[in-house]
Image (cartoon, rainbow, N blue to C red; front, side, top):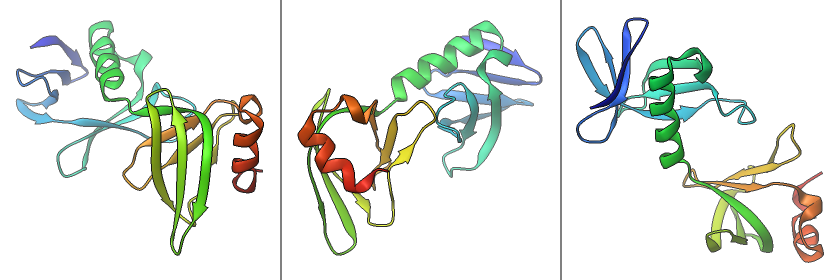
Length: 159
């Protein structure tokens, strides 16, 4: 175990199976972290969830945790982060109930789908998030910095 620390009467640490573990009153629960809104504040309102997606603890702000616990949570988040930065929007096509995006990311070409009623989310910093059907997040840092073809392809879906 590493970074075993007390948070009030809770412990948050990496267990022997390298799984984030939440412990209270001797009961250990392997957890994942889901960031609650707003996504523009990635260090606030982090929900620790068990295997059934039940919230077992809410971290209101990482800065409120002791140093070792905060580092453990930050390392977990970094490893679990799956936000792909979109560099180009190659094509967007609408089908019966889905919208198919073909984009170029830092990780290469990706094709993903959203429901037609799901629209890109604008963040206060001007970036755009798109969550696909699998729960992966695609981020456009700044629409104005995209190439003209990408801006044209994206324009019907952003205001």
